[in-house]
Length: 141
Image (tube, rainbow, N blue to C red; front, top):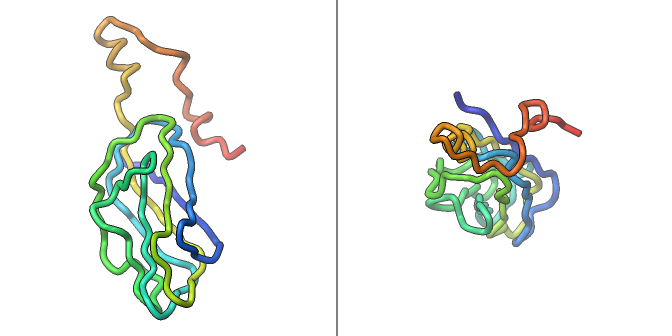
């Protein structure tokens, strides 16, 4: 069953801008469900990249063309595996001459079968603490 990561930002786009968070669990990225900007940039495209620990996870950047707020074409993930604690970021790589504002991104993912479970099932338990329960993973505080 797929779950969803949501990134939202409301600031003016600038090259090098990053919105990042630490992955709360191991997962496999499936697809970009939605990507849009809040306000369109004009005179040139604005491009975004999704990175895992600084490495691009996409086969090509997310491009929003001049005057548009919607993704120009869907992109696939080249890097799909994310470990608990990895840093997932959305980076602005190129900005239209008149900058747009904000973005909304939804990525679907599947929680991974983690090493703790595999180690326990094989008879070797290498856990370094207890796995978080569902309420800890989704606690908004």
